[in-house]
Structures are given as C-alpha cells and as structure tokens.
Length: 310
Image (cartoon, rainbow, N blue to C red; front, side, top):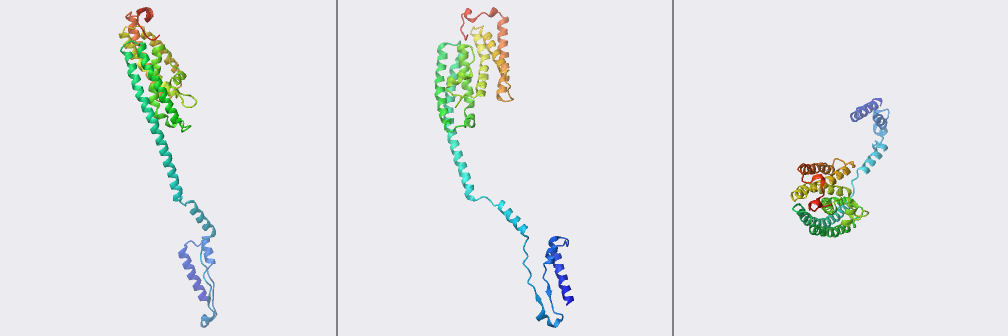
C-alpha cells in the first residue's frame, strides 16, 4: 500500500512539475496541496472494495485574477455604433452650417472686392493730374456702397455671435485694401491721417459688435503709404514742387508714430519696414527739388498757382 501511495504522489509531482517548472512558486505549492488523497486497503486483493478516489477539484483561477480580467474587459469595451454615428452626424450638421455661412460671407466679400476695384480705378487718376473736386467726389460715392456691404456682412455674422475671428480671414484682405483707399482719399482732401474711429464710421462699423480690426487698419495705412512716392513724383512732374515737402512731413510723423508700436515679426511688421523705403524715396525727390531751386525757401504751392492737399 505504501508503494502505491508513493508512486501516485510521484506521478502527481511529475505532472505538476511539467505544468509549472518552478517548485518554489506559491501557486505550485497550492496546487500540490490540493491534490487528492488516495485511500487503499492493506491487502492488494481487496483493492476493488477498499480503494476509493476522491474527485479531483475543478481548477479555477484565483478570485483576484478573475476580477482583474473582468475589469480590463470593461475598459477596453468599444463604443457602441449608435454613439459613433450620432457624433459624426453632429459633425456633419455643424460643417454644413459653417459652409453655408461661409458661402454667404464670400458673396458679400465678392461685392466688396468689385466696389474696391471701381474706387481704385477712379483714384488712380490722381497720378495723372492734380486732384480735383470732381475726381474726389466720384471716389467718395463708393464709400456709401461699402457702408451697405459691411452692414450686410454684420447681419450675416450676427447669426453666429462670438464667431468674428473664426471667419475674419474671409474678408481681412479686402478690408485692408478698402482702408488704404479711404485713408488715401482722406489725405488728398485734408492732408491728415484718417483715424481708426473715423474709418469705422465711414464704413458703418460698430466697434462693440462688428468693428474694424486694429491690424487691418494699420496694414491699410501702410498700403496707403506705398502710393505716396509715386504720387509725389507725378505731382512734381505736373508742376507741384511743394508736394514733396508736405508728403515728407506727413510720412515722417507717420513713421515716428509707428515706432511707438511693439510689432511682432509678422505681416504688419514687414509692411511697416517697407514704409521707411517710401520715406527714403520721398526724401530723394524733395532733395532733387530743393537743390534745383524749384521751390525756394519752401514756398507754398498756392503762391506758385498749383493745387494740392493742404
């Protein structure tokens, strides 16, 4: 009987060792202790009557491992197809709404661009002759058209409150060109710079709801300064020898005012850097006029029978 018991334990040990080669593992010792005990009778002849075998217990993973596996399954569960479809359906509606709004904005911006070309064409005539009230009056007629267009644009943006800078890029370039034209026209009439608040008023903009962006205004002023060197040369050719002095005074003050701003290395800074070249070109024209004695002692243009901005 002792031999049978020893043989069965050796077989169980060999089988368990094959499953877990590390005998010092706590799991191995637990499995070994759970092995069934074989009860036999002292005589081999009575094996059938005294030999009983306990039922092997069903092996199951430890309870802590089962809970961990269940927890991992909860975290890795994929989202339901219904929630996924609902999310992308919401995206589709938002994109369609945004696209429709952009189409309406671009329609108004296209009208602004068309009016800008007409006004620019009328102002180009000042480079061929001295500014006349008739020429400036024609250019001023387009300001009211701009006013109507920007009112339409404000109505469209009013439907999406708080989204001004989301769609600002759709009309930024056109607005900068419009500002440059009305600032140039104002200078031809008065000889002074059109202020930011005055530009907003001319365009019918409201600073609290739909206003004129400060950078758009400043860039428009820089665009306007690009026209002045050409204007000076053409006016001197037409006989207005005092024009370089007035433009030089205006550009010097404007350049000094821009120096007060701490500009970043962006598009506005590049346009401001270009202003110093405009100033240099006007200085060269004024120098040529001065050394040739065409306007001695800074004689006013009215004394020479010429006309121009004061």
